[in-house]
Image 1 (cartoon, rainbow, N blue to C red):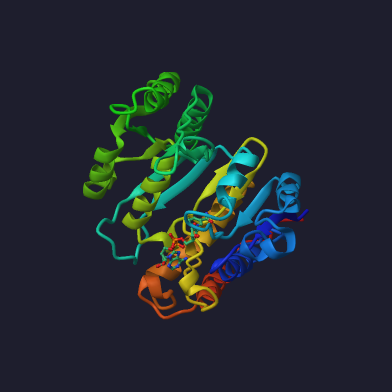
Image 2 (cartoon, rainbow, N blue to C red):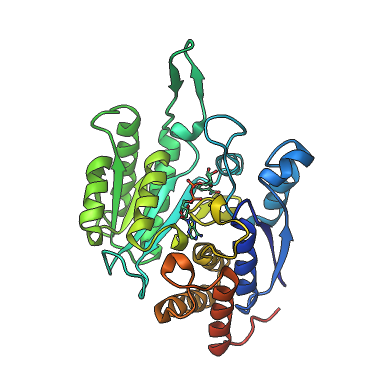
Length: 343
Ligand code: NAD
């Protein structure tokens, strides 16, 4: 039976990347039945909201979605669709692997990090208000339940994926209660994995410095929402930029796979953006669906095409368009074709 997946093309470069990703996944041998639904700017005129209820219903029904980036206005305007999706569907873990890719010239050759970002609270709870005309207050929510849940996710991920260390990132020296609770929760969970997975912690500013100096010393990172958002872009930069950084939002009742990057409006409609991040998000989805071997084949095809360097997008130093890059990956997949997965 084909897997029914909600496909949200998104804004800006999203539709081109979604099309490229869909073609690659369709060539993987796994049968998909895509339920395409729009969210984002295009929906506002018709539905009065960038996230219509039928989009949420589709994800709830299928329990799995692949999503392109969605524009969020800065300062005023509607609330981030991405944050709303994560909170409404209780997608509490944001998984963002950052792994070096052969053929991509960066400062480091051996980065292999996995970021586990808490996805539902912290300053992203969206509780902010003006205090008189000249001051604004934003409330940072950290709970023991959500902190322990993401810590357990990080340790379980480490065990399942043969990782050896989890590093908790915080600012508990200054935010003694909120970040203090996050750190205490991570320490509490770490005790259950004693002897199996090493545990350490870092203050977030020091962590950023150490990441740019010596990223090879880290393995799995667990962070509250805001630091996770910032540090994952930093880590994307270590391995070649936002064009190659995949992500997954995982909850108990469903999962939404999406690239780390945004809608890059300046490249929209130009067949120029790099689909790697969204295709690798599709690879995470294949693993989540229980196809580790096919996921590995698709990932290898992407890596091979990048390593060869002949058909890569502009951000990787090439001249290929989004669709030509996807064609090269599909060609590579066909050349190494495995038997189709039985329906
Ligand atoms: P962005 O990620 O869209 O773009 C930053 C820069 O990164 C781009 O100008 C481009 O140079 C590069 N880039 C990003 N993706 C690329 C790709 N696939 N190929 C090649 N180059 C790529 O970040 P931004 O400009 O800060 O945000 C634009 C919009 O996206 C904002 O409205 C923001 O809120 C939204 N956003 C959405 C998501 C999401 O949907 N999950 C995530 C981040 C930002």
